[in-house]
Amino acid sequence: MTENTPAIATADTYKRLGANPYRPWPARITSIQQLTPKEKLFELRIIDASVRDAFRHTAGQFVELSIFGVGEAPISISSAPSKQGFIELCIREAGTVTSAMHRMRAGDIVGLRGPFGRGFPFDEMRGHDILLVAGGLGIAPLKSLINHIHDERHEFGKVTILLGARSPKEILFRQEFDMWRHREDFDLQMTVDIPDDDWDGEVGLVTKLFDALEVDPENTYGAICGPPVMYRFVVAEMRKKDLDVDRIYVSFERRMKCGIGKCCHCGVGHKYACIDGPVFSYWEAMNLKEAM
Image 1 (cartoon, helix red, strand yellow):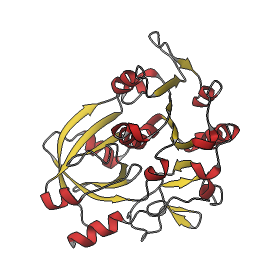
Image 2 (image 1 turned 180 degrees about the horizontal axis):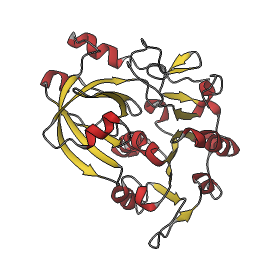
Image 3 (image 1 turned 90 degrees about the vertical axis):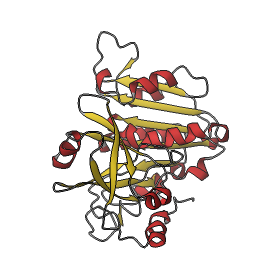
């Protein structure tokens, strides 16, 4: 069975630059967009031109965001790898570091370490149908993959995106997704748990969207990102559609700290989310203790 190969680009970048992976690179906030009452989208630009030019990531990787004098937190990269020079981070205000970030303004300086981890197997996915399932904030790392596919749309077959949220006002990237719903080359379906008076879509869990879904299991890759509680149920629906366990990918973003496998804080079974993940094939995940 095929396994997602660990990313080595991060180590190569630090080695090539002679940089210390524990030392954040200063980055300037270039724009801030309020997405929901709890989430903002930050666009960042690394100040050092040599570092900025060397920075490369794959969809599914993350960075460690530093607010100087406050702390550090792992954040998934939301921008596509093809967007050079700028990095997008979708951040929910939830703790000390993220709350401090929400108080920042355009022009302020923060720190970045990374990119870290192993992303989605983009090259393996080429030439195939793609089924993406996101719940809540899980759309943030999947947006990087969606935009990467969008940039090379001719390389892929049918692309289906299933998105679940608690309520319409909590749907991230709503304006962008409303536009994509009307594109012929993307099949975007959304559902919410609690509708409002203006909601005209499905109501219920994201697994409900599988009922009428047609999938070619021999030619489809699946990717899932969202609250841990949804994983086993979404995987079960994908398995009902006969997707192979080594063609279903899940993102485990949990307890990352150092980003380079030294602090052992993000252990998933006998592996570490920061270097062996955060993206795992379901074949790997089903054999990892405490993974799902």
